Length: 119
Image (cartoon, rainbow, N blue to C red; front, side, top):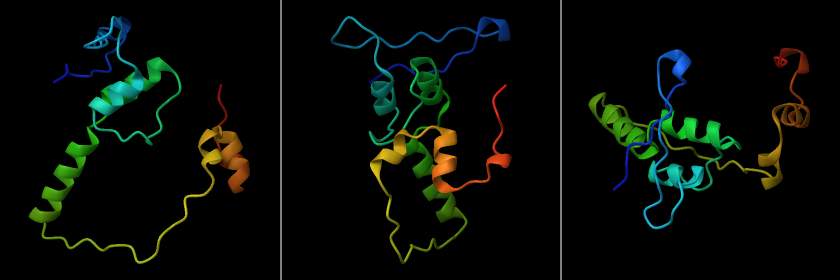
């Protein structure tokens, strides 16, 4: 049992800062990864590296288990027969997970002119 995990909004936008849940056994707030686990995200799922954005991603997300259940019911209601893939894809090197956006674009040969620049 856990409190609702909310992203919250800044007071300038008419909202409030959502309080982070307190750990049930230790005198601290839960971590982003613990919040993700409570929300049914698998441990391999990558979240933003900052606490603020990570909590915001989890708080704004639909629970993966809920999404799967709703998707199954839609498939059933629409009488859709999903096809299973016939080939497996290799995931590549785990080091790819640590690339920043521009590093990944260069690695995969993306057209650098199409990538928006910050600022």
